[in-house]
Image 1 (spheres, helix red, strand yellow):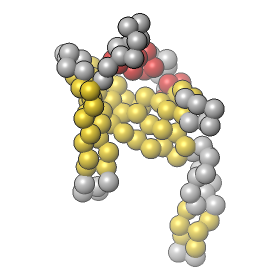
Image 2: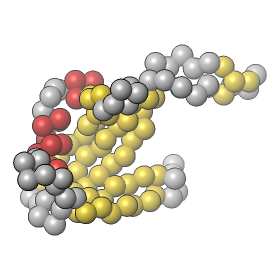
Image 3: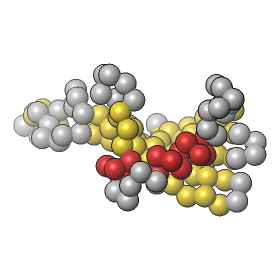
Length: 112
């Protein structure tokens, strides 16, 4: 079990007047499908992919979990006899968040 948790706070602002609100953008990705793989988006040409793993709304709050899906440079597995190439096709890097809609404040949690 992790013993250290870091919490980062961010003020969220729109880059343009026509940009969606943060909660609307997250909700739109969530509504892409029932399965996590259906909610996976490629962000750049270097195969960086993210997906929304969990999403809930309650009053002025939304919370959820975003996963960066790593599909290249997968680290090896460590066995007593030494390192071996991983058989995994991908690896997930998780970050949970909580966002206050009216205050436009995002809390992002990362374990150490």
